[in-house]
Length: 223
Ligand SMILES: C[S@@+](CC[C@H](N)C(=O)[O-])C[C@H]1O[C@@H](n2cnc3c(N)ncnc32)[C@H](O)[C@@H]1O
Image (tube, rainbow, N blue to C red; front, side):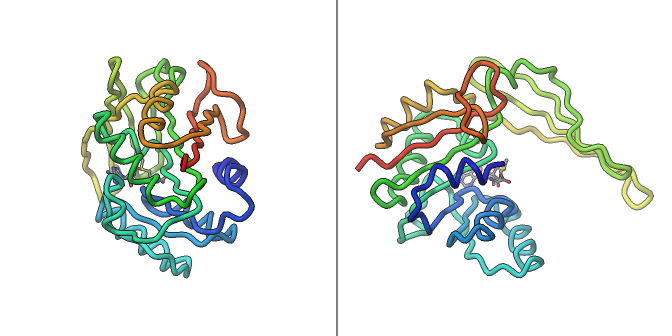
């Protein structure tokens, strides 16, 4: 589980954590249950609206802010012991310039020696898998991914099929991820001012290799 890699990456005194692409708050909830003081932000107003409802339902009072992770200083004056950006969120940015801007913005929200954790599901192994994946298969709803990639980008064509008496329709949209692999992270994080860069292949901190199904980056604010 993500909690293992996050907990083991943080020093004992880590208390305050920012999830800067919090989505529907699954990790904020988990980290709050573990006793961290958490803040969340996301670029998508619709994600934040679902996030607020989810927090209300589980009676959690966690501050959420609307913010692009390239410009975290616009929403947060405070600094954190850890910043996390999980589940292939950073690869939504498509240029090295934007990636370095985002990583610098994350670094600036960290206290000295604070830790950044990035997790993505894009690796050479996952890129080699069959291109069609049924990711949800329920009686009333299916979601199918059709994936293609070149050297720089992976495009996921998402097909949502609603098939109940109440709702019979389909929709299609694309998600385009920049392919960022271990060497790229080393270069981009160094340029952004991080040191002590560790790359893992799974939540148990096993070494990253060509067969890894995840790419997990842990880096420390250098100064
Ligand atoms: C695949 S979802 C992952 C959400 C969450 N981290 C999780 O694990 O459930 C990617 C998230 O990144 C957010 N995102 C994409 N670009 C962003 C940006 N520039 N600034 C902040 N959030 C962004 C999206 O709105 C979305 O919530």
